[in-house]
Length: 252
Image 1 (cartoon, rainbow, N blue to C red):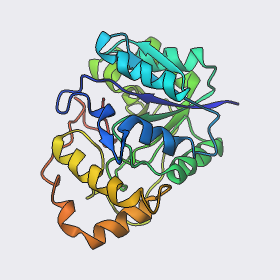
Image 2: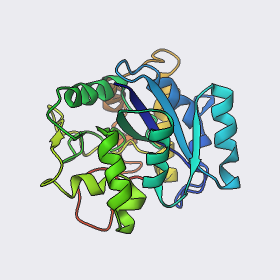
Image 3: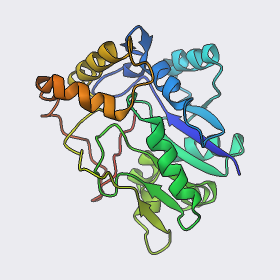
Image 4: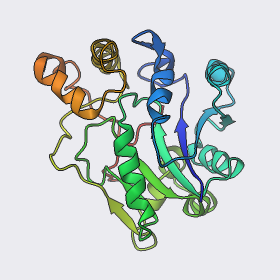
């Protein structure tokens, strides 16, 4: 069984264009994310899923430079992009990560994969409901379920956000959530706006010199030392999908 991390990424995000290549402690955000994803123990591959738009050529070039596979597909039908990337890279299990989450903790990804590997779920998330910081979203699901969604999903939100077809149909798919021992959902660590970027930039600049493999606990400890940083992006509202849902649905 092959588990592949598929990361959606594009340059034309609406609130912060080009964010995936903005610098974090001297390297593009996407490079920093890849550094963290390479520490995941329970995955056998990483694929960047970007678009065929010319604007996303820099992402493809960076992937080539980093030696990471890059699949290019539809910009707005992200579900088809994921399904194609999964099929072409022979994945049995898919781990969905978005490129605007450079603080993602590899140990948390392994934890969610481990729960999926227990074998009694078709879809495992840590955001149903959210108890982790926004920016720590992990979804793990079967390639077979993804293929079914690709064939059957018709709503725009299902095509754009990849996984709603799965968690909007609990009567069909076995869903499971991995909750945080302590509710940390008040923290916003995703990068969708200039304010988000400023917070994450500060975190990387302070942590990378002494803790390059920093964890979620290290981030929380640093924020305890600088509580004013938390206020930088507390007013930002997460963009929702069109139906009521609780998972993080960022579409870089």
